[in-house]
Length: 342
Length: 175
Image 1 (spheres, helix red, strand yellow):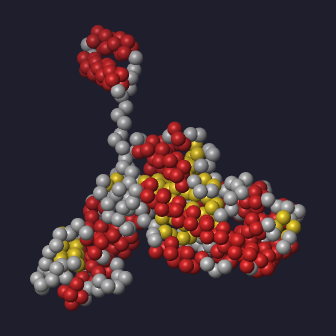
Image 2 (cartoon, rainbow over the protein chains, first blue to last red; image 1 turned 180 degrees about the horizontal axis):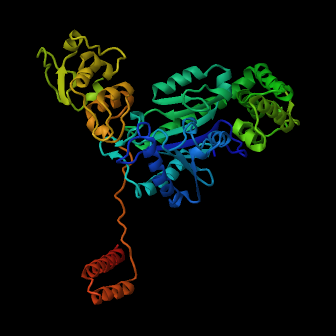
Image 3 (tube, rainbow over the protein chains, first blue to last red; image 1 turned 30 degrees about the vertical axis):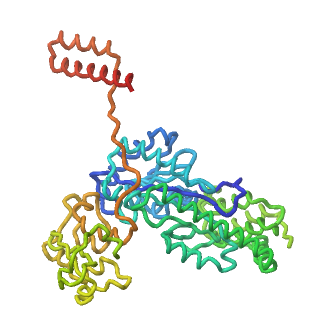
């Protein structure tokens, strides 16, 4: 799971280390027939479940999952949005504690990832490295000594490693200082994406930073560079918050106050709007403008007000408008005691 | 661009012979790879723009190289049947064998997408060979039974198993 409700650290939200692997003698998923994919899933899923580092494991077939199930998995960052759109022939194996998730027949045969709250790239790599080493004993990976692990998309060839860190950067965004940072990151080989991954906007002031290239650098080098850049940007954000308080206090208080106003009074809230408002609230808590509500409460709300999580709480099927109404209700209930103090 | 061809030795331009060749092109025609080494001047004269943000794939398309490969009967991957045209369209190999079949084309696509050209990360280890260590008294009894039954094939198999088992135990003690 990526979100730790108890976490106080607000800027570096979560880390993910993902490896792409394929099996020799099998066509890549996009080109493979449905029969091939079903066969591969049936063969590989039990092998993955039996790995010592994955036990106890839970195997899921995308075909048997409901809309709610798939959304919940996405919201917990256990599967990608792309994988949630898959059906027969694709699956996922989860470690029971949700620290490791292995997607089968996504873009590659195997996409294994370790996710944890906070900055945890090194430990994430150690976890997934063990899983990978265990799995390579049981299957034959497609690998070339010259160019490394062979993947469906050449952008993953080599290490097959995509490491990313999710950062909450409301102050930098408020001060309009994200553009030069994003440009700098892109120039130095990092990709910047929104909360839901590829092709999404940065809503909720959340930015995902990941390595762009996978070939020609060792895993350690990739992770070290990413760690360095993340710490640097986290430093900028903290500095920006201080500057906001010292130089633009009213602007900041207004931003937070408006979020408070809407959250306490709105009757319909979309999940997207919710994330933006909760981001403002979290900033408010961090700088001391919002009182009597804890960061953990806000983090919990962030997850529980997502569509899948909301649906799972109730028996009857909810329409989007039902959810918007319930969301607004839930927020008013949970944040009732909240106060603003400029 | 020079970075991508660090491995090339110094040579003269194949076109004019006057200047040093610093534009190295891999030309794939009918499944055959030909290398062309020219200087910037001659490259420019032949319509190759090396100063713009053009990708190498574009350059070769400009040379008509990739198109020719398609016209010439089309190379296809023996495993997944991906054709050169399909690869050019989607930039995606269909299987691991494609990386061999379309080595030259993918080298170029990779050079575009990646910073490095050689893998320097983790390498899959040698597979552990599992030698089952079954209690040998049991196996020796089985061996005796097999011999009594005159099932010499089975006897030979069991004898080998006993040997392997003893050998691996010895190895374990030594290491």
